[in-house]
Image (cartoon, rainbow, N blue to C red; front, side, top):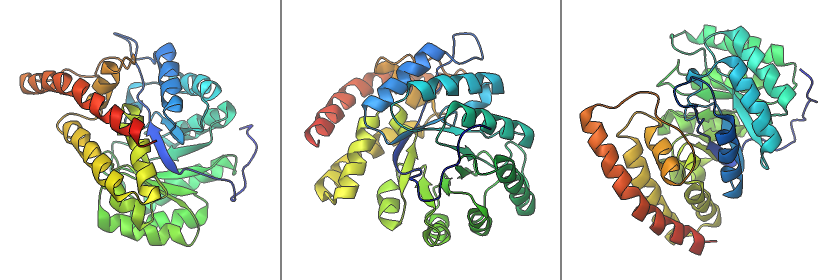
Length: 311
């Protein structure tokens, strides 16, 4: 790894961080690099505080390590805001190799799930994370990524121990308010970053100690999430209620489909080349998707006007 070490006092993950989509070439399991750079431009122009590449919204499981590394390198060079990389993998060696590439590319930091697909006990999860952290040698910030739907859950006790060992914070996508409250205590004393992946609970969590959100919704409608964040930080109660309701409307569609299908479809409808879904839908969801396509343009016109007025 060649990137210079950062100090603990430097800013880390905070505010609205967009969990970017990863455009895929038609008929191929490789990143559409030109389309990805357009997505990066789009997100930066919307005023997000950062971008995470190859997260769950970015469907990292569809892409090989070399493809991920090349796309990250180009995106970091193109981006006008900080870029972070999810380096999660089924093996420790591959996660370390991806982190090495992220450091060489100039990424601001890396996120890491527990090893994906299989379930592990907490002692094994801790060992995995400690060996990964040791391999980084402090070269760039590393963040825990708790997403129990797709990997082993990180307990509050494990998160606290790993933050004490040197992890700079955690993204929690559990959507569990009780668990999040436990993380507030684990992160508070150390100043570690605490971000949620839940747009639906963000208003509640922002006031309870969250330092930001890593948002899949922001991959398609970043202006809405940025405006919502501004209202939350400014104590604009009317804006919080109005924009929060808009977020809820979009999330309700997202939750009907395999993630991140609706986010990708919304991005396509906005003129981005987000590409096709990874798998076909059954007849019922195909009909619902057509309903979403009819619903979104008018909804977006209203949201666009509201977010422009709130600037």
